[in-house]
Length: 110
Image 1 (cartoon, rainbow, N blue to C red):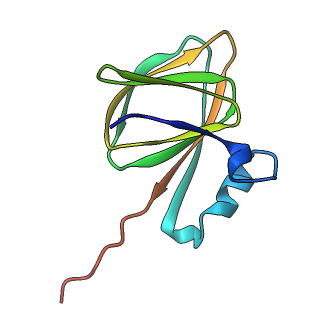
Image 2 (image 1 turned 90 degrees about the vertical axis):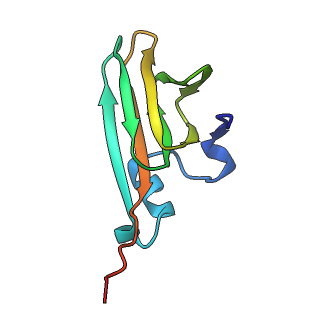
């Protein structure tokens, strides 16, 4: 599966923000919207137990899964599959991003 990026302006006329992203995901109890900040120079593994979306508010970063890689900058987003990624902050400024996970619905056993 290839990783593709999209522009925030393709889905909203509002400026990108945590609040604008939260407004897209209703009901709110069905989604986890998690803002994160990473300092310049950070390079680490990132493990995703669930597929999720990543929105970049500020800065640029790179995700690598196997031989596939994708660079995202402010006002861009992508969908990532479950798995382990290499994550790197690009450039000399911090990255602010928001991850959105759909919370799995648990069906009670009767």
